[in-house]
Every structure is written in C-alpha cells, then in structure tokens.
Image 1 (tube, helix red, strand yellow):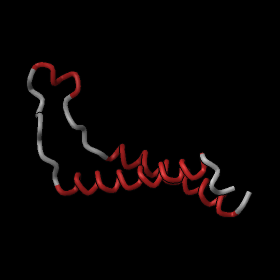
Image 2: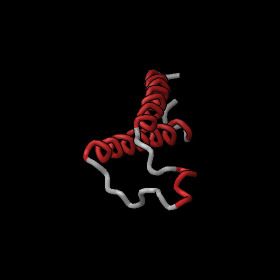
Image 3: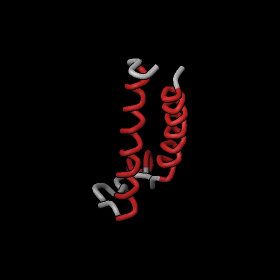
Image 4: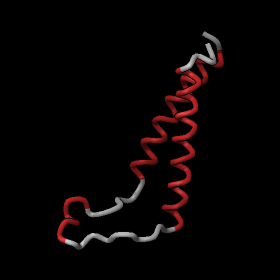
Length: 77
C-alpha cells in the first residue's frame, strides 16, 4: 500500500465523520408526520446560514464520492 492510498483512506474516514456532523447540524425541513393536518410550513425559503451549510455539505459529499470512486476503481494502490 502506498502513502497516497493510506492518505485517501484516512481522508475518506474523516470526510465521512465530518459529513455526518454537518447533516446533523441541518434544521428539520418540515414537521414530519405532524404536517399531515396541514400545519406544515411548505416552500419556506432558506436563511443565509442554512444555505451556506447546504453548500458545505454538498461539497463534502462530492469529495467523499470522488474518493470512493478513486479507491473503488483502484486508481491508487
């Protein structure tokens, strides 16, 4: 195993943990089962912090998927 492979595996693990933490920081998008009665707030806009958190989360997800592809296809050994 090369140093690059080890670095990618460690990076993938850290990105996975960071991704879970970011997802848990998101505000709930609705009322779940409580919204069946019609009291759910639909189509509400995102605030600045939530929009930034979305962008950061999608960036981390993209990097995670990229590393998964690189490791999965064996481009680095």
